[in-house]
Length: 514
Image (tube, rainbow, N blue to C red; front, side, top):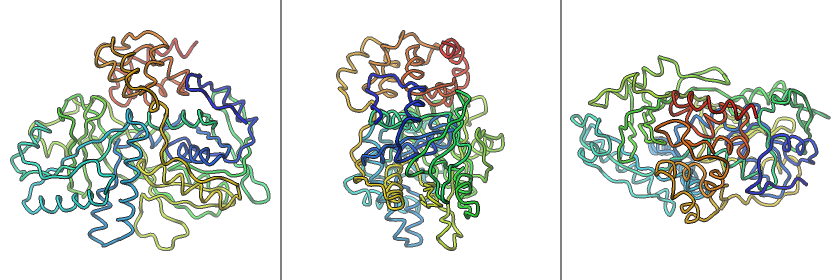
């Protein structure tokens, strides 16, 4: 049995690799995004031995490229109301319960957020107020706050640049927001501290199939440059947009179930939301919604939803950037231009249909679980419902594999960084400048003092809160292997400000060469 990492113990890649090859695995999970990390935590909570492998970095794909919202699904609720679809009401209710769990799991990485929907017509105010009131009712005891009608003056306070002239007012409500990649890294670190194993930059070359059933995977270690095999009593496919490719290795005639769309986001230097509330623009000319959100010191704008091709490194096209700017500026009295953009990112969304579910004229982002010759695939869904998705997936795995396991025990899970003494952490940070102290608490929670112990508290770049000690922490304690892992998914600066990321990247060179 592999020994769990201790909270103060480095996360060494070679140690993980050696333990993986020596392990007697109940469950092997392929794919290191939110779903894969969730299944790993769920399997461990049931007393199973489990490991996760990922061909890029953990959270490198869709899971680090979201709109950063933890939500029950206001749009699902509107669809449910218009079509009287009881199933969608239930989906919203479940997601609202999971929203509250995510906020409790890691309060430093997830927090409540007030969103205001501006309204141009008088009929719109009671319409949105009724719908968001229903959202409150469905949340029940999980409610974060009450929705309410807001005046034009209140909208101007929330977003001074908004063009209030055509507005009648707005309706505000509460959802959650989070740091998606850091939340996911905390999930993986938590799993390692519970006895799980995880290896990034480990690609599946081929599935191992015996007697028509998947029993493991032949793996390429993209860091060491060699190949090895892993076997397990159950194999789970959590590869998101790439789900069908792995399914068809297990079963060449498997019916495809995936369609992919792209969603881009812009990060702006201008502080459009000075009091920390977000804006949800309810409908663009083509029926989408547009978010304007405060996020880690920047203003985030998104998102698009266009058909896309599979791509490990999706990028925002100029046409998509222009689309967001055009629609955003339609609501502002002070236009945003290209010079205001500090960074962009693009993510692939898995749109899934159940291959065994008959007619699927309408694609959904709800999760689907299928088993093909011993390979159980979990796909679809959204960040908010990762825990419930993982629970459903492991129920299916246990039913098909015959593994003896206990019940899921992730309902009250607390992630790494959310278990210690806040007062002690504050004491360790009190001598630091306010912006650095706030950043360290938000990113690392009660482990901020341990981060400080890794090196100097000197700024990596003037005017930003990132410090030298964080580079060592990311490389030694958070599984980062390459510069982009640190910049994009540990510090997040690569997704916030490309100029600062480039400057910090120069500091990383010597660290990576050590």
